[in-house]
Length: 91
Image (cartoon, helix red, strand yellow):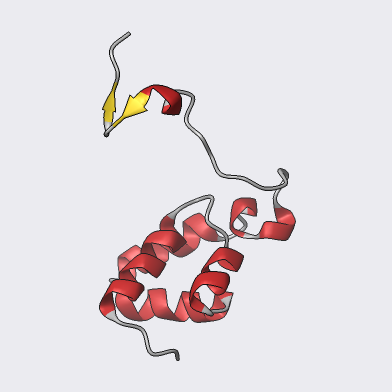
């Protein structure tokens, strides 16, 4: 497996939990294939957390770029325009 520091491992786990972050994005950023991400998750998480994650990710279209029904881009909250410095602006 790749030489990863704890900060990189935490970031990969965070990205893997995110619904809209694809395995392709993780591969592009860290060089890990889907199976390597699964192995990393298995090694660095509690067994129950890993099982929960696998159940959540299995069959999810958004984790695979080719299966997505939208082209590109990121999810954008409808209120994002009005959020400033982590506070929702008053209207």
